Length: 224
Image (cartoon, rainbow, N blue to C red; front, side, top):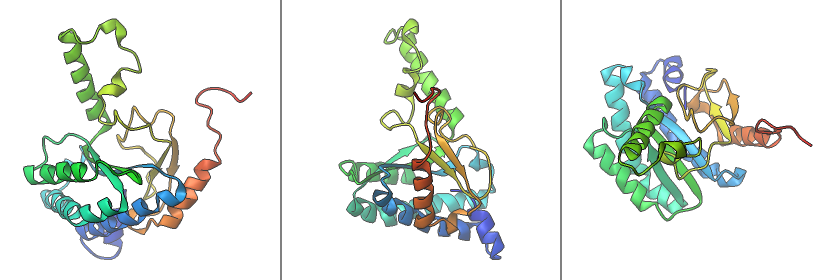
């Protein structure tokens, strides 16, 4: 969900104004998922690299996350969204982590859409943490080294209960994946669009999903 800061700058407003506008856009996209056949949606809210931003912006974002979860929890539950969070929670403050835990518990029986929020998430960090857990199981004898293959590591990832993504959308005109779901996106389709996230509409989301539906996905094979 990129482009919040630039969207605000274009309007002569502080970057946090753009982040607040971007947060409002999330509900529209989430609630449009059933209409376009999307069962699983993962949004990249804050990366492990975002700590490099100014202290003012980071503090503002953390406050926004707490406010968003508190304000949207009931609406997400009533809509039937199952909410999960991925990423390393160690650096997050206790109040935010409590809100995250509570929202996961509140919505755990919901099925209309599975919403995953990547918060303090980085693909390399996720793989490193997963590898550490895997190595611990090898060290304790719970896993044999010869049994480790490409099906093993995903069981240790944050996304172990989720399917791999089919489509990754990057807004704001940037043509890079920025450390997002590196392992899981090996065969994902990509869309890099110029739209800044606060201007991203459910109509554009539907158009991109429809475009994805027409793609020929061979996963390394050939059509017979």
